[in-house]
Length: 65
Image 1 (cartoon, rainbow, N blue to C red):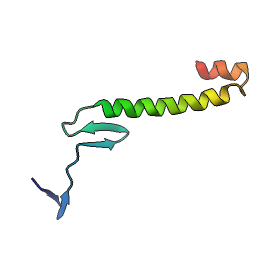
Image 2 (cartoon, rainbow, N blue to C red):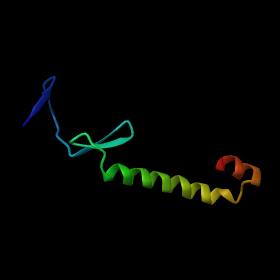
Image 3 (tube, rainbow, N blue to C red):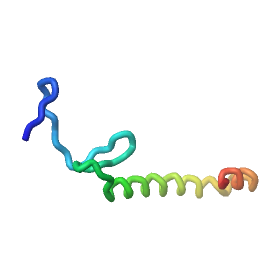
């Protein structure tokens, strides 16, 4: 089935990222979104772990809360 919008054929995809959320063709969350969030969190956590030893105790406590 081809869908046209203003004389442009729209491509049908199995999943898409829209506003930071990955949804599938049935407009549901799927494991791809959970995996995406996990990767993003691991990256930020790794960065924090690398710099945490250079922070003062006060700064570490402030960030924690």
